[in-house]
Amino acid sequence: MSIVNSLVARLDNGEAQQYRLMPHNIDAEQALLGAVLVNNDAFFRVSDFLEPAHFQEEIHRRIFEVAASLIKAGKVATPITLKTFLGEHDLGGITIPQYLARLAAEATTVINAEDYGRTIHDLAVRRELIAIGEDVVNAAYDAPVDSSPREQIETAEQRLYKLAETGRYDGGFMRFSDALTSAINIAAAAYKRDGNLSGIATGLTDVDRSMGGLQSSDLIILAGRPGMGKTALATNIAFNVARAWRGEKQPDGAMKTVNGGIVGFFSLEMSAEQLATRIIAEQSGVPSYKIRRGDIAEEEFYKVSDVAREMQMLPFYIDQTGGISIAQLASRARRLKRQRGLDFLVVDYLQLLSGSSKRGENRVQELTEITTGLKALAKELAVPIMALSQLSRQVEARDDKRPQLSDLRESGSIEQDADVVLFVFREEYYLKNKEPKMGSEDYFKWQAEMDRAHGTAELIIGKQRHGPTGTVRLSFQADVTRFGNLASDDHLPDQF
Picture (cartoon, one colour):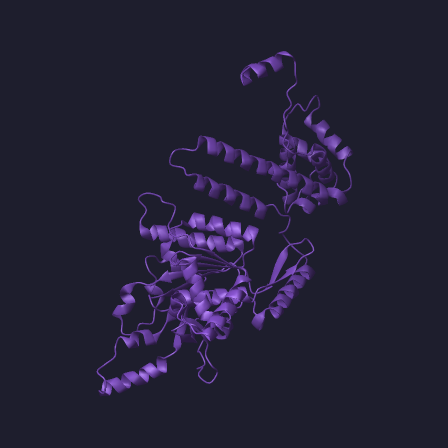
């Protein structure tokens, strides 16, 4: 017997069909509305998180909406004042005025209003989860030819993450005493961090002193010409952040970061193995070319082994997929934060990302979409994002090769969307290409300049929303591509 015939036979036999109802609690909705009508103070206990759309019954949505409008306007919401705005409805044999009077008569105390509101809110979130699930199923069945499964997954993940972030009860005004407590907690957290910083420590003392660490929700652009060491500096900072990570288990079982951070690294240019080899070289002091060739002494081998063993325990996660879009990157970052946690994100590098593949869009518009998307992602995840960027060739045409904001490649949106813009500059790199004839007067001048610039680099803070601009001098070991703090006797005070 076919499925259709079997169903018809069951219907003919009078077998009742059961349907699952969407999660709801009419009693909680009625109790809350009754409490509001009796004492308008009940509304303020739920107004921060509860909206009319959270009610299952349409008439309850309308009652709450009208009551909210009256109370916000400084008027009183009672069965008498509300009935004028609700019109005529037949509610199972009773009128609107009768229904409002019944709600008020059966109302419970105001004390329980917040609990009822949370129950209504949670059930509304469940219904939204069901709606998302149904949309995923329907989209998978009826997807157009030009819609890929990956895009559907990204859309579903974005909706779920948004629901998770908005489905909370916090927000709104707080007592000043509560604000003081929060301020003390922030200060205590900064006191526990390395360097007593408000943000995440980079491990580079002078950089932290100038920036206060890596600030939450900031988009940090790290730019430079090829050969300046952008990736090396980013990996140095990322490793320092991951190595300093320390977490405390909360009463609910979640892990809270108290120092350092969990790092996500999108390596769009290098493979994960190449990136790991570079970090091992940076931390062990053994050049990467020697590690790749296996041309290392026994003592160097033990150094490499010790660093590799330490790295295995670090909260450092690498995504080596090349050519991904900003939407894919955002989706993977959300997933990492949800599954493992995330405190700091690095993107190497900006120009290797793609936009939303809209036809007819030029590269400037595409890059604008990318930088805007990264800034939005930093705010959404509440983590600092460091995105590396190439600079235009116009730098090479100037006598002074130090980069400027106008050198940012392809789009002014990079400068506009960024909270911080950093430039890496190594004068030694350019001086090497200007070596004059040995023994000449120019050669001795060149040699003096080389000695002055050797082993140093400049990190130019070209833009900083929360602090001053200026230049920080760092040490640089070219053989292991490692940046560090300059020794105190070599350090020249920076002018800010």
